[in-house]
Image 1 (cartoon, rainbow, N blue to C red):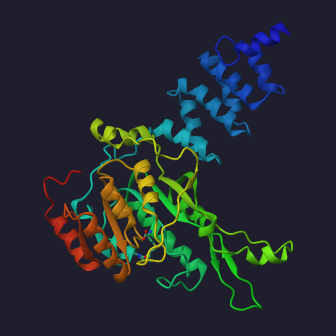
Image 2 (image 1 turned 180 degrees about the horizontal axis):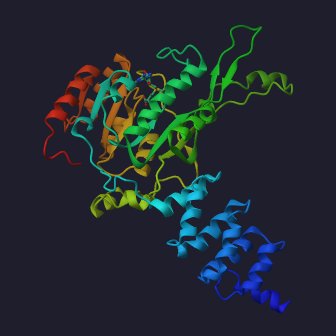
Image 3 (image 1 turned 60 degrees about the horizontal axis):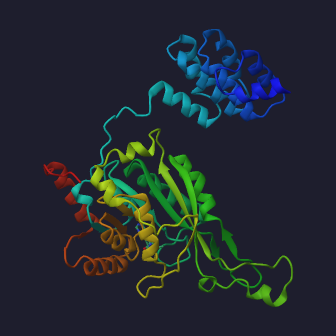
Length: 408
Ligand SMILES: C[S@@+](CC[C@H](N)C(=O)[O-])C[C@H]1O[C@@H](n2cnc3c(N)ncnc32)[C@H](O)[C@@H]1O
């Protein structure tokens, strides 16, 4: 008993004997204990033990494979370890593939010096036009952060799609472009909720589309790494009333709750770099000036009342934009909303000393944005607005004649 206690105490340190480590690895012990046993073997740094570690890189449990691989990294120059890492690049588990990739090629990619600069033609700019057309002339890795709420399928008249799949294809092409123009390792937050299409008549049923879940796999496929799901919770009274029928008849199977949440799905442009690498691209003063004060949400349920507007039927509350901008960007960063609506993201960006770039297809809403931001930025007169054609001309002119001081 005593001996058992002692060797379990030593598990994880190089002092644990090889014999005891093997007892754990070959016995009925937990994954954590087996990982500790592999860690003890690795820390002995003894070439004689390579064989054992190699054996466990074939294990079914990916955590065991990763721990065994870590133990072999001290011999990273050896041919057999290099071969192992190359084989692991094809492993069926994505986290194991990532470990192999980072060990073989490092955290950076070929372009070592990633830039944190913003082209002048995107700073505090609103463009009227189809976002896909506008983004055609925007360079890769230009923006820092995107927060948007797309048109909700055919729920409003401003955008009509032939079917749900066509709508998802459209969103996928927009978010592929957003991915391209986003800087390495930076964030994208998509605000959506399931969509309800009302029934055509009493004989038929209404249909609900699970938009946040249907779009997720497509986003992951583009290269957006899932980071968090935040629930935007609204007071129940602000929700569409779906429960009233059930409330009267109380018949099981007819229950339809009032929807009072929306999803904020947080993604990061996939990279091997850590967040620290992103922060190191800033000077200390910018980081200091961007520190978030106490008014942030500790949990992933954010209680924020919706805003109604006479100018647009589906606007963000400014407070929602403030929260995401403070948490996912730094001062002077460029924040983007491809479906700008009434321009709430622009208004919040001005308040928080960020630059904004907005696109909006409707001339009516574009005019609303211009009017709104003119009031917000009256003192500084700091923004420009374009039709897509004149925006394109401005970009071409900039490309031919780039200013010397185009730094952030
Ligand atoms: C849900 S609303 C966004 C409202 C916005 N968050 C606000 O706070 O006012 C979506 C907007 O996307 C715009 N839109 C739809 N299709 C578009 C496209 N292809 N390009 C640019 N904007 C588009 C619509 O006109 C609508 O104003």
